Length: 183
Image (spheres, helix red, strand yellow):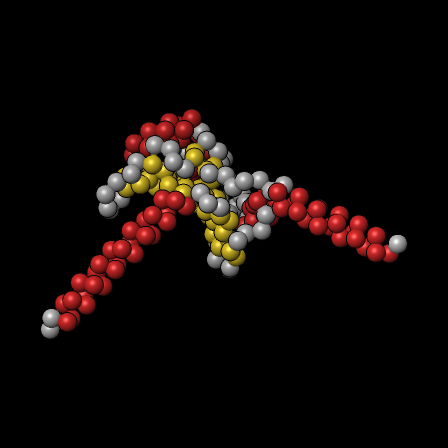
């Protein structure tokens, strides 16, 4: 009889842990109506419709060094002082949004509250250190950085850019080695 009770206990424990792992929500691919993969014009339109970001129009848009890189920077200090958001950055590659960076007002919110909320919704982070906590799946990397920054990154684009940078580094190293051999 004890074996049956013990087996039942472990079966219930196993299934509650197993089902609990699947009750977590999928990682979001953005914040509010701003989603990774949106075009520059789609992001501008979404920002115009959401006063929480403090978007002021074209003056918030700039070009970054390198080809096909646009940045939209918003600041709520004048246009939306009631917002929990402070400065937000929307970074594009090949005219598609691939990084959303949201700085949250430290006088209105705290790191622990956001961290706890994210853990409750998405489970424990895959990576945790004093500077940041990271959750990720095959398409999104979500990080909570100190002091109070939430970042969404398109993992596919990010990995591609990392691979491209490695190829450039390898080519540079090969050229460097060839130069040194020719001395």
